[in-house]
Length: 473
Image 1: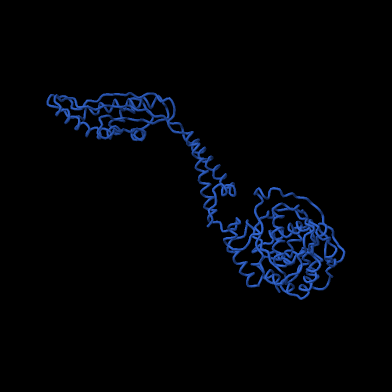
Image 2: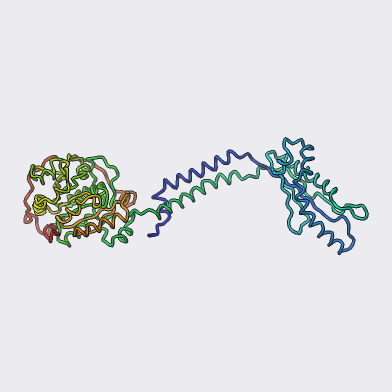
């Protein structure tokens, strides 16, 4: 699978990343709003042996005291210590509940014991820490063994009294910042995971890896344009036109079938834009809407479907009466009225004769068909044109669908020139697309006969005709 830069993933899935970032910020804000500020105060006690005149006695007394300090740390949260503290400070709590706010800690091989109290009132937590230390000192005095001189063997000294805390200890600001940060990281992670699991064909490299065929161009996909809205050719479409004309001249082809693995909107959009670009180049172009099921090109151009191709095939309308003028020298043959069985009309000899006629009269004939996988139309039409161009929609086409479509076209002996990838229109190379609205004319004169001699030799802006060549029939 192709490695994708993380910034490209974030750009494509920015809504997901933003949603999780905002969710993290809201969650942290909600958590902080439910948490009251807490304050912490600590008192430190020093335990020492009360007697010992020699170094040996002092060492033994110190080791003895260290062993007892760990036990006294547990006594500090016992009811024997906290009960008197509750009564002395008149606290509205019980010794068991107070024990949850009191901790006593000592370091290994240390004679120091630190008593820490956490609470909602800064002055009260300082008083409570000192009171617990004082009461623990009394309890230690009672529990310490008595020497032969009736002196307590453990002496407790307060070395650091509790100070009133200046501010809360729960890091509310840190939590507020951590929420959106964690949401952002989660959003990038989820976006990356979805990108890895996404089987759609999104980049030119993926197209080449999946198909091994030439990518003739990457153009903007259909972005929900209003019917009848025509796009002035973008630079991406012009590049596609240049690559297509070179391929047609190389193959000696005139008619091109445009289809897609699934869905007609992307291929219909490419067909209309490509026809417009070819007309701009000065070529005589015929755009045939052979998608008798959805009439996608006609809907794209805002043209009524009939009379059109289905009537011409049926013999009820001559082709000259069904053609419509479009964009100067461009002509459109719409799909016609809905047929009960479109698949039965397409193999008609009348369609073959029609394509023979228009291939001789036009420089380029673009034929748009229904998608490959749902119907057999594209396979039938591919045998009646010179070449086939497959349009992959990056928004919906999966790699599996693209492989299956190409395999089906191969079984139909289609001459596939290459592929076109429709992007979302967010890339820089597609940003120059301009939308203009031009209502097409409804009728045209009869199909003109080809007149190659009328073109002055050496005229740079007049492209060489691409008619003729070997038919894949």
